[in-house]
Length: 159
Image 1: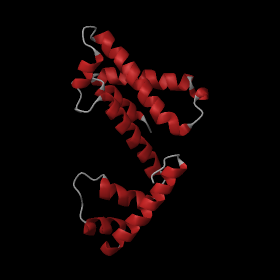
Image 2: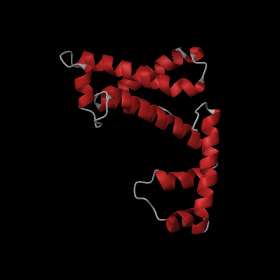
Image 3: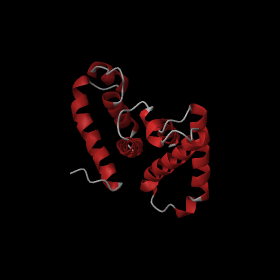
Image 4: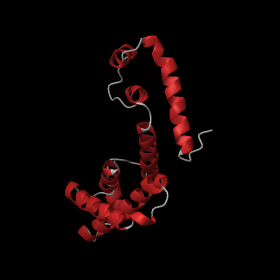
Protein backbone atom coordinates (compact mmCIF):
# COMPACT_ATOMS: atom_id res chain seq x y z
CA UNK A 1 0.00 0.00 0.00
CA UNK A 2 2.82 2.43 0.83
CA UNK A 3 5.50 1.08 -1.51
CA UNK A 4 5.03 3.97 -3.95
CA UNK A 5 5.41 6.48 -1.14
CA UNK A 6 8.63 4.90 0.14
CA UNK A 7 10.07 4.60 -3.35
CA UNK A 8 9.17 8.19 -4.24
CA UNK A 9 10.80 9.59 -1.11
CA UNK A 10 13.95 7.56 -1.75
CA UNK A 11 14.12 8.64 -5.40
CA UNK A 12 13.49 12.31 -4.56
CA UNK A 13 16.44 12.14 -2.20
CA UNK A 14 18.56 11.41 -5.26
CA UNK A 15 18.97 7.64 -5.16
CA UNK A 16 19.15 5.57 -8.32
CA UNK A 17 16.41 2.98 -8.87
CA UNK A 18 18.35 0.03 -7.43
CA UNK A 19 19.56 2.05 -4.45
CA UNK A 20 15.98 3.21 -3.81
CA UNK A 21 14.86 -0.43 -3.82
CA UNK A 22 17.58 -1.29 -1.28
CA UNK A 23 16.41 1.63 0.82
CA UNK A 24 12.80 0.44 0.62
CA UNK A 25 13.79 -3.07 1.67
CA UNK A 26 15.55 -1.62 4.72
CA UNK A 27 12.48 0.49 5.55
CA UNK A 28 10.14 -2.53 5.40
CA UNK A 29 12.45 -4.53 7.65
CA UNK A 30 12.63 -1.62 10.09
CA UNK A 31 8.84 -1.30 10.07
CA UNK A 32 8.48 -5.02 10.73
CA UNK A 33 10.90 -4.85 13.65
CA UNK A 34 9.14 -1.77 15.12
CA UNK A 35 5.58 -2.82 14.28
CA UNK A 36 4.57 -3.06 17.94
CA UNK A 37 5.71 0.48 18.71
CA UNK A 38 3.46 2.13 16.11
CA UNK A 39 0.26 2.91 17.97
CA UNK A 40 -1.49 5.27 15.57
CA UNK A 41 -2.04 3.89 12.04
CA UNK A 42 -2.79 7.40 10.76
CA UNK A 43 0.76 8.38 11.72
CA UNK A 44 2.29 5.56 9.65
CA UNK A 45 2.70 7.60 6.43
CA UNK A 46 4.57 10.33 8.29
CA UNK A 47 6.79 7.74 9.98
CA UNK A 48 7.52 6.08 6.64
CA UNK A 49 8.36 9.40 5.00
CA UNK A 50 10.72 10.52 7.77
CA UNK A 51 12.38 7.12 8.13
CA UNK A 52 12.79 6.69 4.38
CA UNK A 53 14.20 10.18 4.00
CA UNK A 54 16.79 9.54 6.72
CA UNK A 55 17.76 6.13 5.32
CA UNK A 56 17.97 7.44 1.75
CA UNK A 57 20.17 10.33 2.90
CA UNK A 58 22.42 7.84 4.74
CA UNK A 59 22.71 5.70 1.60
CA UNK A 60 23.34 8.76 -0.59
CA UNK A 61 26.13 9.95 1.73
CA UNK A 62 27.68 6.46 1.70
CA UNK A 63 27.57 6.25 -2.11
CA UNK A 64 28.71 9.84 -2.68
CA UNK A 65 30.69 10.95 0.37
CA UNK A 66 31.69 14.21 -1.32
CA UNK A 67 28.05 15.19 -2.08
CA UNK A 68 25.81 16.59 0.60
CA UNK A 69 22.13 15.68 0.76
CA UNK A 70 20.99 19.05 -0.59
CA UNK A 71 22.91 18.37 -3.79
CA UNK A 72 21.18 15.01 -4.11
CA UNK A 73 17.80 16.65 -3.58
CA UNK A 74 18.56 19.30 -6.19
CA UNK A 75 18.96 16.46 -8.69
CA UNK A 76 15.45 15.22 -7.98
CA UNK A 77 12.53 15.87 -10.31
CA UNK A 78 11.02 18.51 -8.05
CA UNK A 79 12.21 22.04 -7.51
CA UNK A 80 10.47 22.12 -4.13
CA UNK A 81 12.33 22.15 -0.88
CA UNK A 82 12.71 18.70 0.69
CA UNK A 83 10.40 19.52 3.61
CA UNK A 84 7.73 20.72 1.20
CA UNK A 85 8.05 17.53 -0.84
CA UNK A 86 7.71 15.43 2.29
CA UNK A 87 4.62 17.33 3.40
CA UNK A 88 3.08 16.97 -0.06
CA UNK A 89 3.77 13.24 -0.07
CA UNK A 90 2.26 12.84 3.38
CA UNK A 91 -0.88 14.73 2.41
CA UNK A 92 -1.20 12.75 -0.81
CA UNK A 93 -0.83 9.47 1.07
CA UNK A 94 -3.45 10.40 3.65
CA UNK A 95 -5.77 11.49 0.85
CA UNK A 96 -5.21 8.20 -1.00
CA UNK A 97 -6.00 6.22 2.15
CA UNK A 98 -9.23 8.17 2.60
CA UNK A 99 -10.11 7.80 -1.07
CA UNK A 100 -9.79 4.00 -0.81
CA UNK A 101 -12.40 4.02 1.94
CA UNK A 102 -15.06 5.41 -0.38
CA UNK A 103 -17.48 3.15 -2.19
CA UNK A 104 -16.21 2.11 -5.65
CA UNK A 105 -18.50 4.47 -7.58
CA UNK A 106 -17.45 7.55 -5.59
CA UNK A 107 -13.81 6.54 -5.80
CA UNK A 108 -13.99 6.06 -9.60
CA UNK A 109 -15.79 9.38 -10.03
CA UNK A 110 -13.30 11.38 -7.97
CA UNK A 111 -10.35 9.66 -9.61
CA UNK A 112 -11.77 10.47 -13.06
CA UNK A 113 -12.44 14.09 -12.13
CA UNK A 114 -9.23 14.85 -10.26
CA UNK A 115 -6.58 12.24 -11.08
CA UNK A 116 -7.06 11.39 -14.74
CA UNK A 117 -4.18 12.81 -16.79
CA UNK A 118 -6.32 13.28 -19.90
CA UNK A 119 -9.29 15.01 -18.19
CA UNK A 120 -12.23 13.02 -19.58
CA UNK A 121 -15.47 14.81 -20.43
CA UNK A 122 -18.51 14.56 -18.18
CA UNK A 123 -20.13 12.50 -20.93
CA UNK A 124 -17.25 9.98 -20.89
CA UNK A 125 -17.24 9.83 -17.08
CA UNK A 126 -21.01 9.36 -16.99
CA UNK A 127 -20.80 6.55 -19.53
CA UNK A 128 -18.08 4.75 -17.54
CA UNK A 129 -20.18 5.02 -14.35
CA UNK A 130 -23.45 4.22 -16.12
CA UNK A 131 -25.13 7.44 -14.96
CA UNK A 132 -26.53 10.54 -16.68
CA UNK A 133 -24.04 13.38 -17.30
CA UNK A 134 -26.19 15.85 -15.34
CA UNK A 135 -25.93 13.52 -12.31
CA UNK A 136 -22.19 14.03 -12.00
CA UNK A 137 -22.35 17.36 -10.14
CA UNK A 138 -24.69 16.19 -7.34
CA UNK A 139 -22.87 12.84 -7.09
CA UNK A 140 -19.50 14.63 -6.94
CA UNK A 141 -20.77 16.81 -4.07
CA UNK A 142 -22.01 13.78 -2.10
CA UNK A 143 -18.74 11.92 -2.72
CA UNK A 144 -16.66 14.91 -1.63
CA UNK A 145 -18.76 15.20 1.53
CA UNK A 146 -18.14 11.50 2.28
CA UNK A 147 -14.43 12.01 1.67
CA UNK A 148 -14.43 15.00 4.02
CA UNK A 149 -16.12 12.91 6.73
CA UNK A 150 -13.54 10.14 6.31
CA UNK A 151 -10.68 12.62 6.57
CA UNK A 152 -12.24 14.15 9.69
CA UNK A 153 -12.49 10.68 11.27
CA UNK A 154 -8.80 10.26 10.48
CA UNK A 155 -8.13 13.39 12.52
CA UNK A 156 -7.86 16.05 9.83
CA UNK A 157 -9.85 19.22 10.38
CA UNK A 158 -10.90 20.59 7.00
CA UNK A 159 -12.95 23.57 8.16
